Length: 207
Image (cartoon, rainbow, N blue to C red; front, side):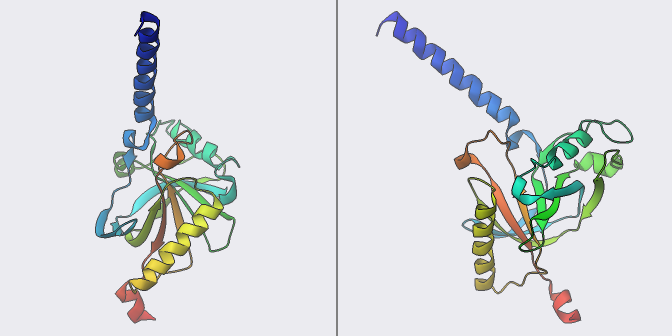
């Protein structure tokens, strides 16, 4: 192996190493994640218990994947567009929800625990608000690839079928989607989820 080939190999190795660490620093592992406990795991499916979470949220068109300005409005909030001009750390996942068969919904960033405990600053941007995502039990399916509408619909169908097999009843028609990765993450490495809130025994008794 000549010196020129060795030089190219060395440069290639450096590029790969730098690229790997750059990806690690901007991937989901670099951010605080919403906390939950796992009750049951079954392949791609889980039943989880979530505590109540504070979100900073805005209206979104789910088919536009944040390209309608919704992601930018939330990013402005964590960059200081709030009453305290406070920079807030990015977290994962980005939650999105909508009624069944609806294009419009809500996109929300999870407010870090320490910020929420101290009192999250109020947004100053238009169409941005703080809201509480109520805790509870959720059926969840995880999938890779794109979080586009066909993928969402396919994953939701799989989750509903799995819930039927497990005799789990959805609390309502509303479905949540969660994306954990920045847009430059390769599709096969992406972590996407569909979440459906499970109806509790107390709710069954009250009906």
